[in-house]
Image (tube, rainbow, N blue to C red; front, side, top):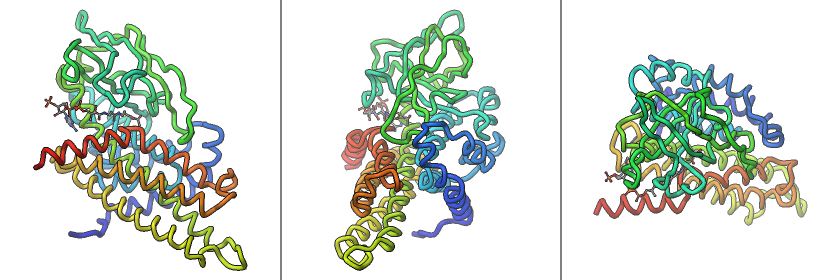
Amino acid sequence: MDFKLTEEQSMVKDMCRKFADNELKPKAAHYDKTHEFPWEHVKKLGEMGMFGVVYSEEYNGAGMDYPSYAIAVEELSRGCASTGVIISAHNSLCLSPINYFASPEIKKKVLPKLCTGEWLGCFGITEPNAGSDAAGTTTTAELKNGKWVLNGTKNFITNGGVANVAVVTAVTDKGQGAKGLSFFIIEKGTPGFSVGRTEEKLGICASSTTELVFENCEIPEENLLGKRGDGFKIAMHTLDGGRVGIAAQALGIAQAAFEESVKYANERQQFKQKLSNFQAIQWMIADMATEIEAARLLVYQAATLIGTGERQRYSKYAAMAKLFASEVSHRVTHKAIQIFGGYGYTREYPVERFYRDARITEIYEGTSEIQRLVIASNVIREF
Ligand code: CAA
């Protein structure tokens, strides 16, 4: 067992940490307040290879390993959680199913632009009445005269308003539940495909979260990813990777809250001494540090397993990493506000933003309750 990062992983960590400190941190409050999409960061991160971290250099990807990807999302989220999820949803949710399941022609057409960040991607399975029940999709795709015709609405789609490419599930065989779903790729500009309502959110305010609307949207037959009827499995396979990305995002938010808290505890004086002299504060700091380290080990372990192809193992570890890191992020950002006291509740300091940003990590890409379900079903099957 070796807990040391490789040379490449250390390089990614340093590069993303510097970018977070110099570019993301100084602007994060502005983007949080204005809800503007951070295009300036997207451009620079594209040049850094962050839009195709694990994908082949043949497609302009950076060709790195999964732990490097998790480290990148962690460090970027430490600077700006919205930027973290823009990167995570693009890499894990949009590019992964294209990379695994699209035809060589489609891959050649879209991946080179997606991997550089010239194009952004999104993933749509959620619908107004199909959240945790991902197989409850009602969007339909009918094959007519050699074209798939899509009708329906997806919601809560990260990168929805800015994406050039969407990958979505739709019912192709009614009445067959999960086995009746298929997976499609659609390009922006396709007639019948539009962006619907934009959500106003509690946190991650600079990320775009919208509806995707399909109204008799015709796409070529070859835009089916994988086989007809495999859509649910492709979505689950994709979410295994996505959950590691969100776990890394949660970890980065927790780390940022922790660092700010220790700095503040060393500066702020009450009762004629530094806050960090008080045992009540020291205990909070000790718990934060310990939980963050434990979450980091789980996130890196899950990321290491993704590349192995051992589906059931990484499905379980991805769920464990997402569950644990998101709940740690919640507890750590909660304590951060406590350490800052009244100031922590104001916009003068970033900890209230960390608290708001952390909350969604317990919900998207599967709620904590769904992660427990995935973990339990895998654990029980192992006995
Ligand atoms: N990889 C591949 N296949 C998988 C799989 C995986 N990880 N997990 C399950 N499958 C397969 C199973 O093998 C099974 O196939 P067979 O019938 O051939 O055996 C099939 O899928 C059905 O599996 P289950 O019976 O286990 O499915 P279930 O209905 O009991 O449970 C669920 C499914 C875990 C509840 C699932 O619906 C789920 O994960 N729900 C949460 C959805 C979710 O995470 N949504 C997030 C939206 S995306 C988002 O938030 C993005 C964003 O913008 C940031």
